[in-house]
Length: 177
Image 1 (spheres, rainbow, N blue to C red):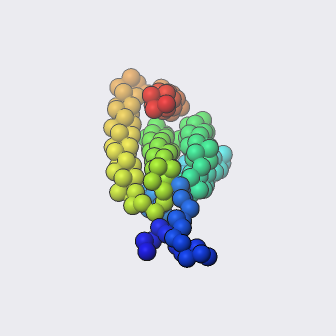
Image 2 (cartoon, rainbow, N blue to C red; image 1 turned 90 degrees about the vertical axis):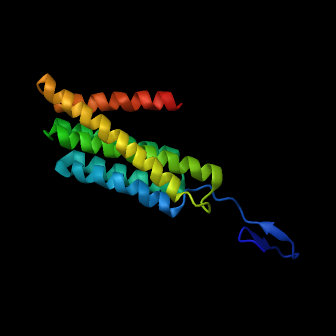
């Protein structure tokens, strides 16, 4: 008898119900960039609260396979980044917080999607890890380019960097839909 079946009362094999949540490995992979973003947002006050809220929503949303909570977590991390900029965080910190938050949100979305397709019993850790690594590389490249442009232009408001990155996130979301 396979691991996916069990014996019913009449002795007939019955399939176990499909669990569409992401596996445990996916949650751990999502938490790495989420924790990085939340730690950078510890610059104080409302930014730290938004970072903690975002990390919590991402964790719960990923664990339970709920896109609404994952989206709320991503928005909370972005809001925390904007608040950190408003309270004087430097451009490098803002880019790291925004980039890591974006990677955490995108990886959580990917993990939830995989869970819906193949279930939590499938070995999806490698796929989620590769997706997170690719997202991290893309975020680091984009953030580095944005930082160089910011410095070459003469350095305006660091919040402008976050808004630029927010526009890139909106464009990415529109392309994915």
